[in-house]
Figure 1: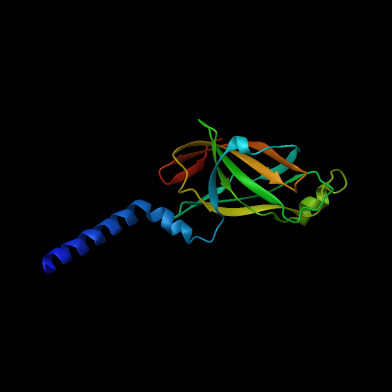
Figure 2 (figure 1 turned 120 degrees about the horizontal axis):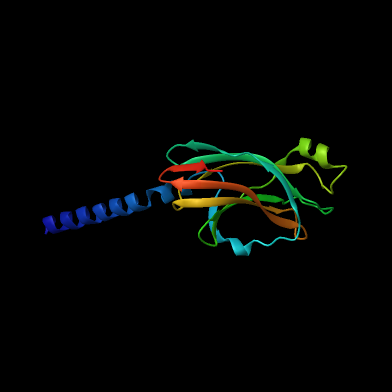
Length: 176
């Protein structure tokens, strides 16, 4: 009877260990405090405004969580409050409508506001983008980078940056 109990406990522990090995990356990502990445359909993102932007190529930080860092700025013209503004990165799979959304709240960039305040309808300095995110959940393949800027409920837009990234194994690199 004791041997059967030990065998059952051993089998249960082995199954828990195997499940952990299969889902280890996703489990670790649950405790990651950086920007979240969600899977979505590119066709779900609508646009009614032009997006004006500048964004870095990005830096592959690497590590166990396969981190990537990007910064820049973006805005749509608006004259309405944009306190809850979002500047999200959309990595669209070149072969499908699937995209990975890196959610990011906007940050202050008074320099951008200073440059554009006289020639564009820029509401305030809340135009900065700076985020670090994990590419573990990305499937292998090529991705085109888009920006989705949501100033408010009235002004939002999607724009391609023209940049292509490739995910192979644990690398996520800029192609062109």
